[in-house]
Image (tube, rainbow, N blue to C red):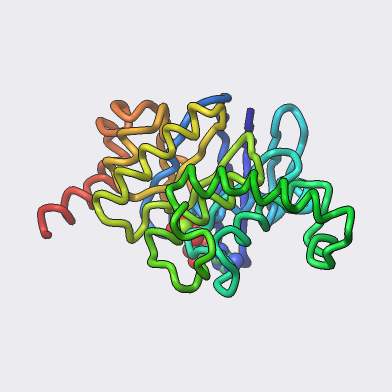
Length: 257
Ligand code: ADP
Ligand code: MG
């Protein structure tokens, strides 16, 4: 479904991604892990066309997508969430999800904001459809709440609902469980599995190893911009280079806490 071929992304002297190649097969959950600064978010930005890679190419369902304008990426069926959350804080939960929907619909945001008559019926349908995504993530009691008034756990759920409203074939989740407590993280794991069951392929960046090891079919490990390993959760947990670069650190942290 997705093929990343020899992608390098440099910012001046910093090489955030170095000659990275991998493939993602349809209907799988793939984990992307590595220490802070490893280049995970940069890779998401390259795949979602926020950056055009310095070198290499990206194929999605047989079509070359690197360098396309970002809105085209959404239309082709890729959507994402952001590590630092990109919800509209002065808009309600349902309005935020409707923005996601419009990213990939005939009626643009501007037309619908102008409330052209022929658009009104369409907006009603959009509202009903978006309600399904709100319910799916469990925010049905917060439909009219302003996003700015939501706690972090619900904001992450809102980002997820908005990304789903784009109706992606491939969903990129950047640290979707960061800052969540144990129960919220477990709920998020369950949601990601049901997203896969809906036929959506997921690429997830996460530091929570219970989540990653519990739901991923395969895992890619980055360190200092390079891919250092790829395999099943079991293979990754045994991998010497991964333990040295990353998992060892996690173990040390959990002993220290
Ligand atoms: P991760 O998500 O794995 O923590 P990032 O992809 O955010 O890592 O960052 C990888 C490296 O690239 C870091 O050294 C970061 O400072 C650098 N970097 C990321 N984005 C930019 C940018 N827009 N300009 C300059 N440097 C950047
Ligand atoms: Mg990051």
